[in-house]
Length: 173
Image (cartoon, rainbow, N blue to C red; front, side, top):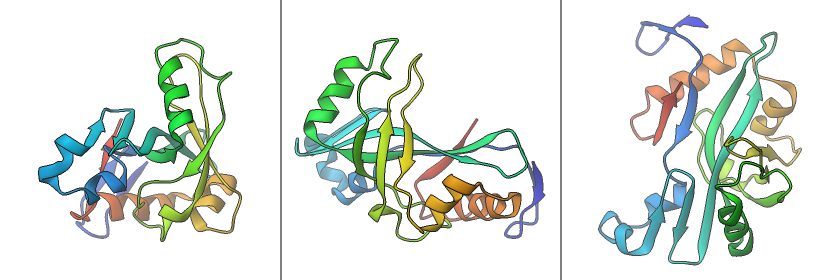
């Protein structure tokens, strides 16, 4: 994919995925308190040993294209499911565990009110992060996951993500 950015005027190349380093709620903890109250790795987060999050992939088909666009996002899970996932995390085969139900825990650029979306996590084998499946609602993100996203909409997502300095998302390859 190559497009001219309407915000900076430059041409951008490729189809990077967009990932978040932490769930939204991690950033609600004052920075001076995070080391004491939070545990954060690239795959797990807990806050005050009472709120638990796992990281996975919310994959969106691109209309008339073979590749998928993926959001690297976080979802809340129960302490039981958090520990079940941690127990099998290093196993080559994990898909027999779950699925887990929770709530999307990132605000996604170009979409409104994503923290209210119900998610189901499906563990996958071979060191692949869980696949996050949104509850089938009429929310635009849920519709895009079911029906696919156009290149034009994907360009809007990239522009909103990479030119909004208030966002905590980053592009990955």
